Image 1 (cartoon, rainbow, N blue to C red):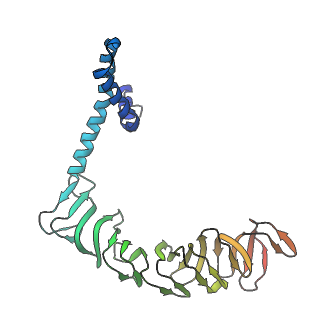
Image 2: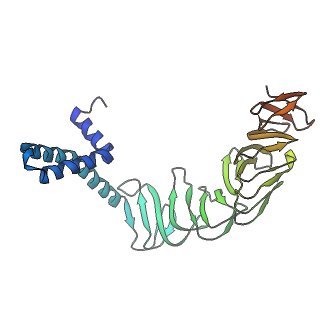
Image 3: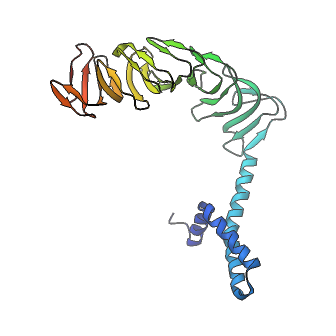
Length: 284
C-alpha cells in the first residue's frame, strides 16, 4: 500500500465505495448542468468534481464488463472441457482470459458429469469437486438423492444432497428431506428436516426435528448439534445441543434445572453421562 500514490489511493476508495461516490457524482453533474445561475462558477466546479468522481467508476465498469465477456465462452459445437463432454450452446466461464482454468458452466441440456446428470448452473472448485443441480432423483454412493442442489467429489462420490425418500443408515431411519453432507474424518453430517425427528438408539432417545447428527461411516454417533431449541433427553437428563458423544459417555449442558447427586443444578451446567453405567456427574 505504501507504493500507491495518494491520488491512486483516492481512486481505489472511489471505486471501492461506489455505492456512495456514484450517487454523489451524479448529483454533482446534475447540479453543474441544471443548477441555478447564482452558483456562477460553482456550477462548473460541481460538474468537474462529478466527472472526476464518475470517471474511475466508468473505467471500472468497462473493465468488469470486458472481463465478464473475456472469461465467458459459448460453445458453437459439442466439445470436451475439463474432461466433461459438453453440448453446443453451453456457456462456460473461466478464471482466466486464456480459458485454461475452468470455473463453471450453464447447461441447457442434461449433461452427465462423473455419472451424475446435471442441468443448469454447475461449478467446480479448486479440488475438482462439482456442485450444481441434479436433474432427476438418483442414488449416489448409496444415498437416494433428490433432484435439486447436489455436490460430488472429483471421483464422483457424493459429498452433499437431500434425501428423496426415507433411508436407513445403520441404526438411523432417516426421513425424506434429510440433508446429507460429508463431514470429513470418515463422518457424515445428517441434518433432519424441521418437521420430523429420528430415534437415536445409542442414547435411548429421540432427536427432535432440525437436529444435525454427526455419524461415522461405521455408524457411531459423534455429536449432536443445531436444532430449534428442543431439549434432548439422554438417559433421562435434559441436555441442549451441542452434545459430544464417545463410545462410553455423552458430554453436554443441562437444558433446564436438574438434580445431580441430590443437588439441583441450574440450566447450562456441563455434565457427563456414563453410557455404560448410566451415572450422571459434573463434567470435568
